[in-house]
Length: 277
Image (cartoon, rainbow, N blue to C red; front, side):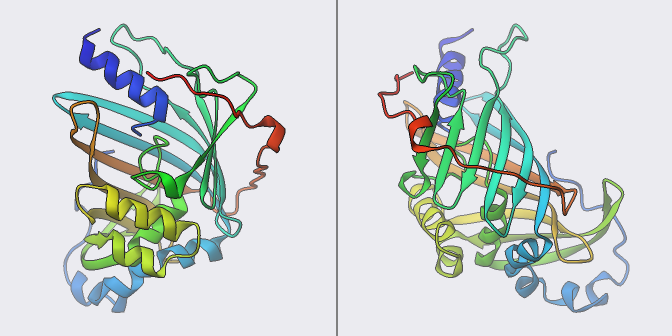
């Protein structure tokens, strides 16, 4: 393994601490612009995507985060559930294999909560039975990248900052008919209207990313619920302070699924020193 690859794997395991491709614009396009009000002016529709998820209650989620810098590319995957009313989620995050095809790290269990990220199987000297708590507002990326997965509700609330968007037509996603939109959101604008907990994270990301402008593709079902969203972030990170390009994709399905997320008790949270990688 090259020195650069070791540095990347160390960064991912520590952050997942520095921490699908977009579907093509397939589907019907004839007369799409005049299809309905949602097609004619998508910005107001996209800005309320988070509210639609709260009304939906819960869902299952699959995440994929691809990071690229200096010719090195890694992908981190996650799967779990989310309660949008309580803004609590649980993900099992799997780190990429090494060049030999083996996993050097156990899957990391993450609990997502307003203003906080809890991680188990963190490594870096943390006991296996302990959780690590991270204040997301204190992260330069607001935990849009750090956990190796973008919090599904935060991903939706980022669309509050939608400045421009275009309707690209209907397509099908996992057997569900959806509408495809492409646009750009502003993190600073999104933070102004987001609920507490999410607001602080988005404001931190607006300052920490290389640009507050975030290109996105999103697919909404007939109820206006997000079925797939893909953001593209750029931030400065790594030992050489180079720009890291991140593509974060979240798939939402199984709305109404049971979700039982319980945050760890204080005695189960590790308070010791975390080893550097």
